[in-house]
Image (cartoon, rainbow, N blue to C red; front, side, top):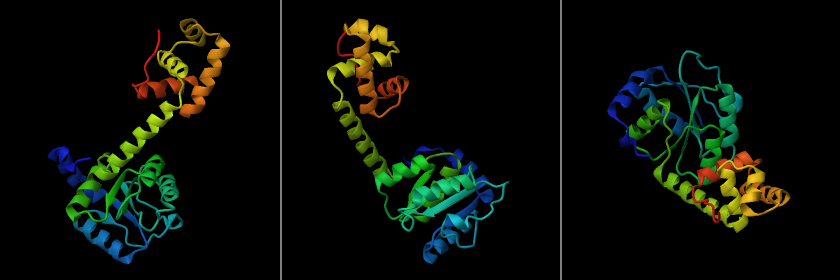
Length: 231
């Protein structure tokens, strides 16, 4: 995501609000913590000064202020997802940003599902880090471009593999499910028995990893390449 794509008015609004944001760094590195405290205090954030080294030490937070947790993902790589869940449970409205030298796409995907709002590289210049946090507090999602491209590529490959598992008949049935057709209509359109249609639908659900025909239809709509092969 390009930071320059957002207009200056929104950043100005962020600057006006930043003094109200309470930041809670979760890290065990004194050097990183000092750097965050210095950078963010200079930018007008209110930084919690006591060391927080895991979720058991999460402090009481001011209910009247927006809250931002900054997690040292270098230190908490294996437990980051659990830590995000605990922080969200502790303060549901809080924003959560992971900070690391580099990010594994699998960790990013899992952390995002757990409730992370942004991922910042510890190599960012101070002004880029501050701007990234401002955008997160405005509701934007921040992700280094290299990681975004890697995840997109991985996701496209996964979709291709899932579609490759479907037989031609299953693709036809999935296309009709996308149209909202009931089993009786599918059976008539494809000259099959309803029992056979049910067997195929059960196989489709298993292959694309969903629980019911409605979810299968939504899956098909999301991946528009699924088209009716025969009419």
